[in-house]
Length: 160
Image (cartoon, rainbow, N blue to C red; front, side, top):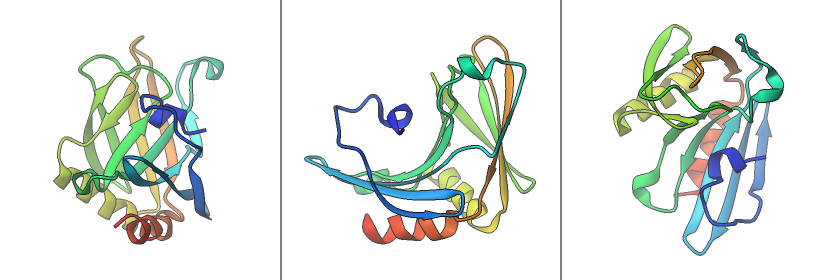
């Protein structure tokens, strides 16, 4: 389920589900490097001129890694390789953010942008992610933010 986000890591046990609240889930796992916590959601709707069978897992994550410098990292997993050097647009109730891409993932360019995105996610009700695949296909994924604030508070308390 979460191999798209954590596939590059050494083999790990499945994450422990801490809370499912509406459209978001809070998870954690512990290993020799320490505890990692994250919240995650899948799109409510995906649009674009592509075959859904050719698209992998699509999710948004906010994570706290074992290192204190790895807190509040926003990550988008597209389910395809992004067009090289392309940007992704995150729109939260009309407030737009730009993310940079690496292969099939998109990230904020700074910790401050991560913080601004998370603040908007807590206040917002819907989030849209727009990206372009390596084949030039534009995709639009719509997420509900219902349950984000509660699940985020769970990981904030669990992964201090």
